Amino acid sequence: MRPIDPTSTNTRRLALLSVALVSALVGMLFAAGLDITEDTTASSPSPTAIVPGSFTEIAQAVSPAVVNISTEKVIKRTGQAFRHFQSPFSKDDPFHDFFERFFGDRRQKEFKQRSLGSGFIIDEEGHIVTNNHVVENADKIKIKLKNGKEYNAEIVGRDQKTDIALLKAKGLKGFQVARLSDSDDVKVGEWVVAIGSPFGLEHTVTAGIVSARGRVIGSGPYDDFIQTDASINPGNSGGPLVNMKGEVIGINTAIVSRGGGNVGIGFAIPVNLARGIIEQLQASGVVTRGWLGVSIQDLTPELADYYGVKDGKGALIGEVFKGDPADKAGIRAKDVIIAVDGKKIESSRDLSRAIAETSVGKKVTLRVLREGKERTFSVKIVKRTDEKEALTTKGATEETELGMTVSPLTPELARQLRIPDAQGVVVTGVEQGGPADEAEVREGDLILEIDHEPVKTIEDYQRHIGKVKKGEIVPLLVRRKAGFVALNITK
Image 1 (spheres, rainbow, N blue to C red):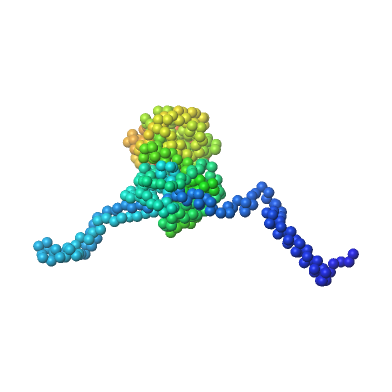
Image 2 (cartoon, rainbow, N blue to C red):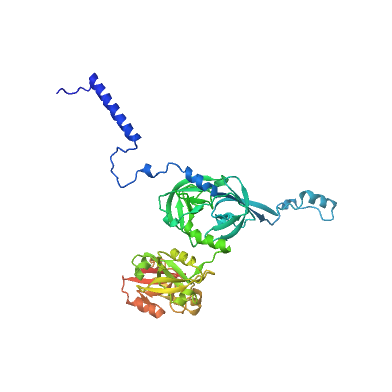
């Protein structure tokens, strides 16, 4: 067989024909929607298969239920605005009246402050959900639909702790209602759409993904935000965050921003957190929360190890307030609550939300770890009133050998620390660079235990410390404000 000469005319024609045939075949395969590339990740979806082709249908379906909110409130001012124009003439001078007429008291007694936000209609009665900070202290509220119609609205109720407000528009007609989803089903990475009025630009639609769940941003005791990179800006507050089914999963509330604009980090209140708040506001205009009667804190790895909580999950009881539900049920300080009515508690915020959402008068079952053993308690929840905090202070000192000074817990200190019995040892000084300082012991810490042994007096403290040899680690359990801290000091 003669070898093929790549430079010959026939060979070139044959090569060109082969290329044409291959190109035609590839074109037909692509036209048929087939993937002819080697599948090296059969278990992973193709990017083109999960990226939505358009958000048009979602925007068209949800936008009519979204409203633009404009508010107005009157701000009163005091003080003289034009002090340098005070009359140089006495009241008896004929020029006094002339001066006062043209240059007299020109103080601006009041001015109108206006703001913009967003919201969405949730029922056929015309109730509208938005943020509390959008309508707080507003004297006038107007809502505007996508079709351009405007209506006056009034506040049904507000909840400052969750930043949720419920409005009702007067005479609202021809409107569409937003569908609410189950926000517990939200997955990190799923596509979402935000609709609102950023900087007053009504019914702006932006898209992104769910960046994270359960975010705590320090805005209140019930933080549990959905984080998204969908563009949210001032004016979006109160508007809906929508899933790909066109259902509301959250209420856009806050952004992280250095200059007032979006940087890709926005936060929305999950709908499931808002449901109970909305129902209470609709029924009575106010929110009533349950109260257990304890101060709580998260378990640090050290505390979890100290109490033998293997998975490190739960809420540690720092203080039980006398006469409140937990006290009556037999709950004690240093108990670790791991479940409420069968629902697992992983952190102090989980417990706060679970109790706050419990109806007043209802009995709940608490699963508790006490000294490594699981126990069950039935507690009747009461209405939450004022927050309670423990205080710390200092007293007379007595020297110790761990680089800190301590003193007995007097009845006066016990009252200030809100401790039932006047027993214990208070840290009143910490030597810089000493063993206690390196272990992060602080002034005002109340030493409760040394190596799991109770410390009620200075004598107890000295006896336990005396047993520890030089160079050994001393495990301490201390009360710090309303919580506990486990520390390890090297003697």
